[in-house]
Amino acid sequence: MSRGLAEVLATLLLLAGAAAAAPVDEKTVHDVAAQLRCVVCQSLSVADSPSETANQMRGIIRERLAAGESPAEVRAYFVEKYGEWILLAPRKSGFNLLVWIVPFVGLGLGFVLVALVLRRWSRTAPPRAPAAMDPALRERIRREVSEMDRP
Image 1 (cartoon, rainbow, N blue to C red):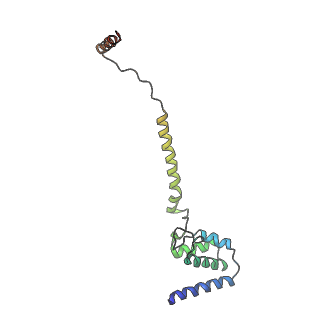
Image 2 (image 1 turned 180 degrees about the horizontal axis):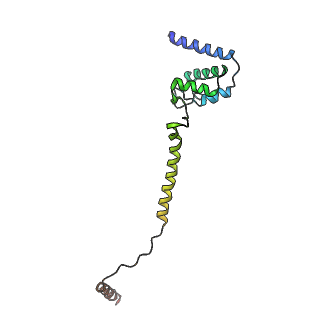
Image 3 (image 1 turned 45 degrees about the vertical axis):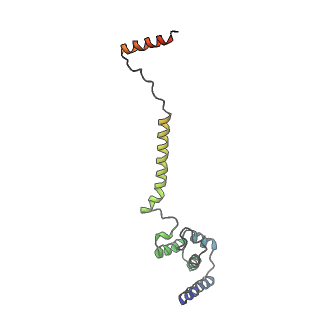
């Protein structure tokens, strides 16, 4: 019970301190919060999450921006605290580069595969030379067809 009360008081102090500090552009707070994952909801950004934790995180963002930190420094703070998982969009460097490249490579390979299949289907088969037939078999077929034509 006292821990919850302490958290509420800490949040109020953060908000009061943020209100007393230099005014912060709410659009900047929203932009930074939109790039961070809510630790409770996990599928929503901090800007979109209705949870109390996201509300506290928005307060921290507001406070740090009011203290003069840049948005990049605020993001770095949360990455240091929670790890790179907190970012909704992974950084475009190192191993994370695969997340940005692989979908496009897969899409390109898919187009190439479809083009090859369509090309194979649309090709007409070259005319084939008639198979060589035994002359005796040919004569027998001719006789049987002529017999069928007789009334």
